[in-house]
Image 1 (cartoon, helix red, strand yellow):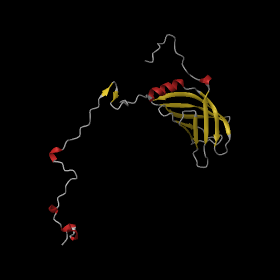
Image 2: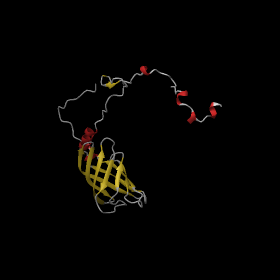
Image 3: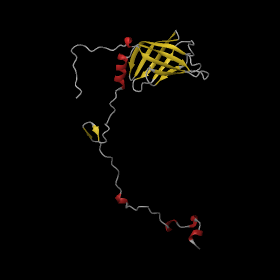
Image 4: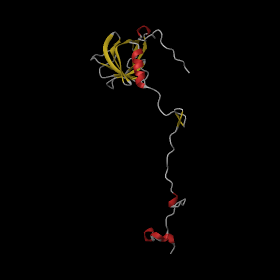
Length: 192
């Protein structure tokens, strides 16, 4: 009887021992040991550096101290393409870790409403909420302005599907900036 005609269940197990594709003696096993992480001059062997050098908490403190308090621009609703003037006046700018807490007033089309928001100092992501129960140029409570370029450009996400949202485009007013001038006699540090 040819071997192919015999069912596998009837074949003795020890007849055909299983063999490895590359036979290696069991005593030849060598455990893997990862290479030691050595650094030369603060950099790893890959040359990419060992740690992130960006400090989002420090940037949040810097932005909170230098951020202009008055922003002006336009709001355009996607429902009717109406463009109205917009102005954001920040009353409070406080760093909280890598986030910046923003509170103030947003004037859209001549109607002023209180707003509160967060700005992420690491990603420049903005979330700005309206805190009133009013409808101004298609804006209503429950919606949110979200942006990925700080306060400069953000989109309105309406709380209902019947509104398509809008676009808030703001620019800082240079006269309202809180940039602190350096004091006299401050040390100048060289670049290298």
